[in-house]
Image 1: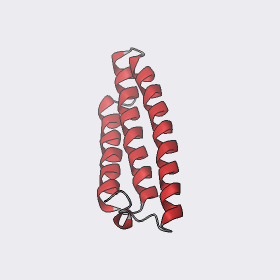
Image 2 (image 1 turned 135 degrees about the vertical axis):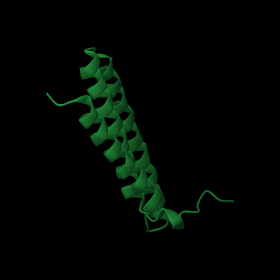
Image 3 (image 1 turned 90 degrees about the horizontal axis):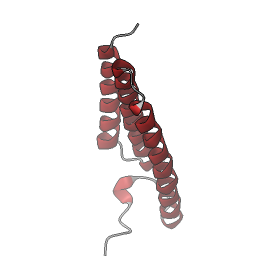
Length: 100
């Protein structure tokens, strides 16, 4: 039986890796992958608390987070592809299309 603290430590570590990836990297695809890592860290903590409390609410919320993540990826990749057609780069520093 793995204690709850180990799950939460893993979740916090993954979340911090995702935060560093969002703040440091400039590639749009890497930023989206870092956001997915953060969402998976939240899922780990939800499932860990679900097991610790012996309820099933965490699994429902985890499923909802996965649905939101799938929608975020589809919309985000569509935006990246449309911006890549205008300017052939995925570097976030070079995207100034929405400025007037």
